[in-house]
Length: 175
Image (cartoon, rainbow, N blue to C red; front, side, top):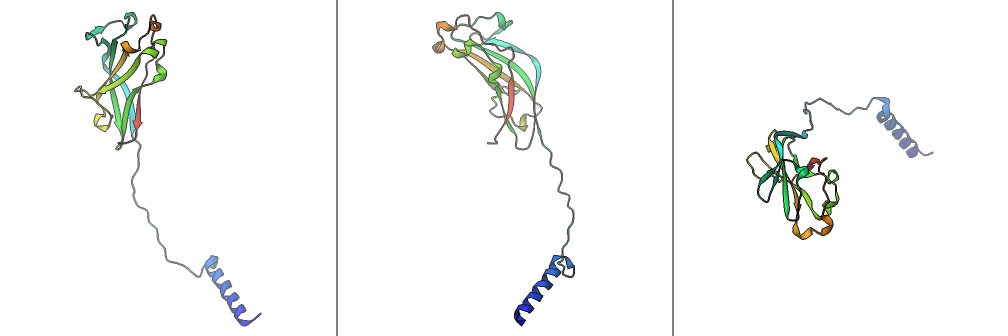
């Protein structure tokens, strides 16, 4: 083995020993803890609130005292109003209130629709529920619409079951 090869091998071995744990070569370093705070998730909830829910016939604005005995005809629009307190706690939180379609059933759905609109305590329309409504009571206006254009003779004596109506408050992407 020539001198150059022997020298290179010796230098490589010495460097490996120094870097690899022999402990004689050290780089300066330091560490310290900082108080970066705590990250906490927000909350989104919906709770029924007063006043009591009501059904109204949109045709003449009369209150329907017993929805089970009311018989709809083509052209009718019925409105169910219920109050809910919303808890919307999150800096970038937006939510939408909607009818859970799985909670509504019946053959009359083929010729009708069930939709929800939301208003604030002052009666103003709300497109997105945000932390601005946190702790407020909102009103859900669920509309059952049985339009003339959709009605057929097959709809006679059919029903829509809203006895398990479920409204869902769902987070939406921030607009």
